[in-house]
Image (cartoon, rainbow over all chains, first blue to last red; front, top):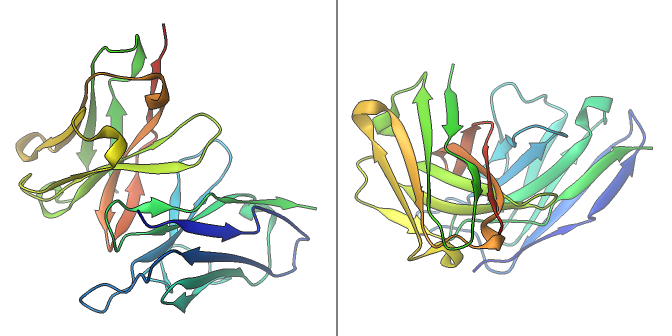
Length: 112
Length: 117
């Protein structure tokens, strides 16, 4: 199985400041058709997960543009340009290139 | 609006069975892959199973292979997960999710399965 490793696992942030989460996969996530199925999810306390980013850098509908995704191959990053209080929660990277689809351990974002 | 409503969770003893259901609405159900994803209490997310549009392709995580069966009824726009030989480590909140672009873009609220004697 593909292992997804996130860092840091805990991220205290100051509102208005940027934040960045790293995700590394144990194998390349480039599919045979050239797509890279690396996704980012946000899970706010007590809520279901919500997808923010798909295929590395594509924002889902309704996701604020302060969220951005980048990377290639095995190294990926989620950036929040200016953290807001509503961004508190756990963020997961997830690969959908190889079965079984696998998640990272999660990064808990909290306000300082 | 996409809606996914899970049901069927509950408390069962080890070795018993349970069938989860997910009622889907707000989209053309038979054009999407569908998934079950679970989350143990206080833990991270684990993909459990996927099924393609007509039910001819199914994928499972190793830990449930041979015990769980994913299925769907497109006429009823419903997704199912038959869980047999349940173990304590199957205790989790089980989410139904619509699959798109190598992940899931819509999730239900989940149904809780507790396996305990």
